[in-house]
Image 1 (cartoon, rainbow, N blue to C red):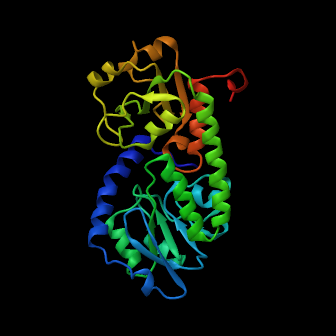
Image 2 (image 1 turned 30 degrees about the horizontal axis):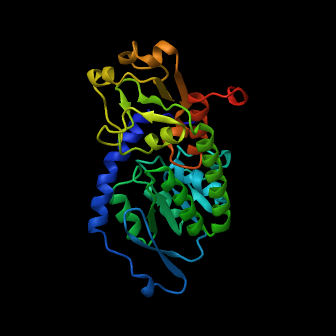
Image 3 (image 1 turned 60 degrees about the horizontal axis):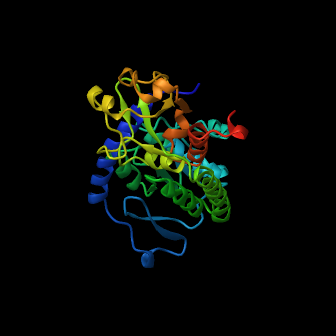
Length: 310
């Protein structure tokens, strides 16, 4: 059964735990430089600026974030995935992979027993103690933290490099870039609607200036009304929300978040009925399906006869 966790809690945890990971990076021992790496190993720098030593031939991978699991499968590395989380449910084959707990509470013993060559995590996933536990057992920990659409695509290329499927990764990323180019071309010249992204209804969380969702809205031909709000996923007061008056509201459709917050009752978006719901997994996971979300947003914000029905 799919485990459901309020989207805003996942995102808030992501922002908070990233600070702990930065602290871990500051005091963790640095791997040897590339020149010191053996012929059977290589060094790749991760999102925290850590030089991570991994085998040249990676055969066993553990993923501790759903978006990373999706990346692994998208670049043709699914056969090397030996462990993932209870939240990793896409593609369907991810459900057949051994589960090692959830993203915030992984089972260390289960991970170690799988003998992975590398464990992939995001800054939404782990804490300092987790990284140290695996490092002490010579298990490589590689952090991929995608905070923009471009970083999502580059993350996929990096995953391909790690698991040895770089050509497949380049092909997959090229296809996604082409789809994004088509979206940009399709909305070029269209009026940019003022958009509010509602991550949760109560409390009211949205996408701040540090969130990749603002860029997703921009690519789809909109303007995020919270792109200047400090932070990644701020909790807005009713007074702040009332002043925004968006022309469209995009709802991250998940448990408890199906309708606009009451603060928007008299907004232009509600008056015109421009309320759009997008599967939370597409918006919450900075992976290959983020392009799906952007295409959906573009069709919602700028409907065309041939793409109105989805």
